[in-house]
Amino acid sequence: MLWEKGDFTRIAVSNRQSGEAFAQSLGITEGMRVLDLGCGDGSTAIPEAQLGAEVLGVDIATNLVAAGNRRAEALGLTNCHFQEGDACDLHELANESFDLTVTMFGAMFAPKPYDAAKEMVRVTKKGGKIVMGNWIPGDPTLVSQIIRITSGLMPPPPAGFVSPMTWGIEGHVIDRFAQAGISAENVSFAKDTFTFHHTGTPSGYLNELRNYFGPMMNAFEAAEKMGRTQELQQELEALVAHCSQSSSEGITIIPTTFLRVTVLV
Image (cartoon, rainbow, N blue to C red):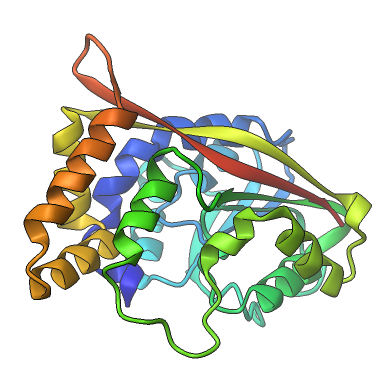
């Protein structure tokens, strides 16, 4: 399974600071019940719990669920738990269970977007809120450009495939939540910034992605079969160098733009 390939926990280290900042922007109060969907190993779920929320992290990848539970236990967070689940079918979660549903680059990768929207609405309390972070197709910053470059190397998608990047298009988002019973005036959008912080050089960050990030590993495997490995490496090296800002402390800083979606349920 794609998200179990490699070791995403190594990649997630570069997400921690922005995950904490995003959590702090959510208006979390003590005892609030939060679902963090497509949570990975907890880059947003753990800081949400540290702010006082009762957090359930749900992810489809067994290894990331286990890693999240280990992190929460090591931090002594009894109010943060992780379990396996599918964003398209959260049958194990009751209706209106959460005050806030958060998904940071998570539910956008679920294969059935209308089902994912319906499930997010179903498990969120009336008067509650859904907040999504979604990558934007064609955006000039790092992630969208990596997806553009690598998608040309992959085999044709199966019939019925819906690109996760369509979650970065406002009209698609409005339509999906409309089908789940949410009126357009209750869906709002803002462009926001998520910054990756890597200890080392830009090329070192790319090597981490190449060696440990499942989608990037697949792209290089496909490039190798096509005899295009060097071409892909050079194109990505140039992209990462262009997008990076290096600090005096030897940290590579890469700001990326995403679409922040807020849904009032």
